[in-house]
Length: 212
Image (cartoon, rainbow, N blue to C red; front, side, top):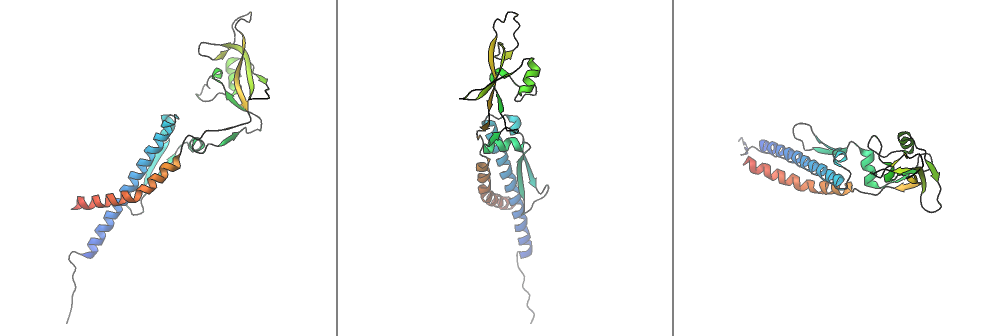
């Protein structure tokens, strides 16, 4: 006697179809999770007042680059990791040479490059000399003898008689400063990770409905 067992539907084909559905579900879920995390981080950065340019430093890459896989992954990162990391951790910043950190006042203006101006650049740009003023209480100062223009910036006095000349604080000098923590990237990352299983199930079910 010869027995033959046949399965209808074909179990091998059924398993292969299920694996393919799983690959699509996992890949779609990781793309959604990565996109959501990228948007959340960018929203945090712009919401903290750090600007859209820094927000756009957040990038996303999905793997594999093409096709689907049960091992699909998403990578979200920043092209400005030092700046982002500083605002995310709120580090204590000290002077590299062990002396002072020069914090510009509004009278100092901004650097020609758009960032924080240094005492050296300020002297070179204005032609004025900075003078050190030590204070026992509160930060010490770098001041200059000049006048304030209509924008509140310290400039050289044009008066030959010294009219309008005043001592203007240009920089505050502190030994260290703690950068305020303005971001919580781990919070959004944890939410994205926690949501992955639900996304996989939802996409798997969606694939079945679409197939039927």
